[in-house]
Length: 209
Image (cartoon, rainbow, N blue to C red; front, side, top):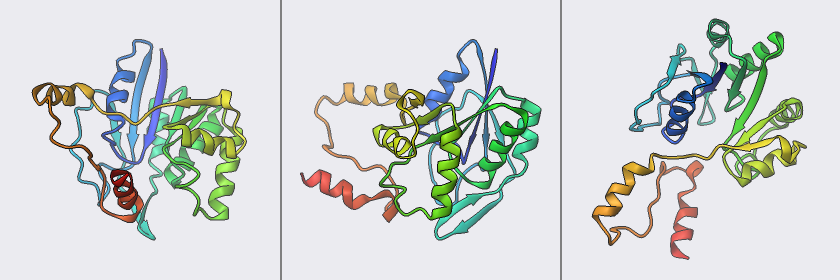
């Protein structure tokens, strides 16, 4: 039995289906450690979570519109669970604590990103330097897209170390609606917050084309 922990900012609806599948894998014991139950700007309806979830005490600081998680309690949570490997989806202080825990106990830490070169083009030298240090020492990394693979290559990560974990939904929930309505009611759907970070203007450009 392999013990796997994920350290995530919050429960993301686009990852819950695959986490449920991982939790159902016979030889994996999964625990997902969340920095908070929900960010202040999220209003998601979450699907059922069929995995062991741990919620840390919420410690969120807002910096330039971004939410920074600082949960030292993650160290105690990891110690209690004692995973063989830890996957983290960011570079918040909470994730840095998890990286340090893995380094100290010689456990595997796996960075995971939804980002791309475009989404990370505004990072400071400190943020870039931290990513370069972490990525070059990682035995394995996970990306959600080809853009994520390009990001890792930019930091010198070999393609053989890159694995894909797509953002996903429960297709069966939507397949029923398609079967009931053979003629689609909509030709284009934008799903996201109406703010610059979600790039709604890009969605409108795609729709226009």
